[in-house]
Image (cartoon, rainbow, N blue to C red):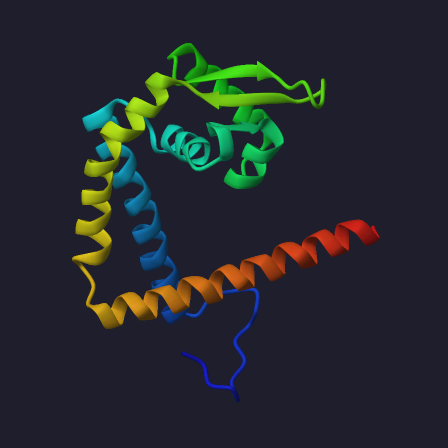
Length: 169
C-alpha cells in the first residue's frame, strides 16, 4: 500500500489495490450469488423477492407504498414495479389502493408471501451463518463490521456529493 508520502495516480489502481479490489469483488458477487442460488434451489424464490418480502414483513400492517419500497431497497421505481408485478402473479404480494393518496399504491404481503418467508428464513440464515460467521473469527467479524460501516459512510458521502453537484448544475 502507498504511504502518505507517495500518492498514487488517482486514475488507476496499483497492483496491490487491483488485487484487493478483485478479491473484494469476487467475494461480494460470490456471496450474493450463493445466497440467491440457495433460495432458488430450496424455496423457489430469488434474493430480490426475499428482499421485498422482508421489507413488507418488517413494515407496519405488512404493507408499504411503492416509494417506500424504492427507498428501502435502493432500486429504481421501474425495477420495483416489474418485481412486484412478477410477485403479484405468484400470489406473494398484492396491490391495494391508497385511500390517503390516490396517486400512491400499497404493496401488501399476502398469506402465501408470509408463508414463503417463514419457510425460507431458516435455510437462508443457515447459509449466511456458514459463509459469513463460521468462516470468520469473532475478531474478524468485528473488523468486518467496522470496515462495512466505514465503506457505507464513504458511499453515503459520495452519493451526497453527487446529489450536491447535480443540484448545483
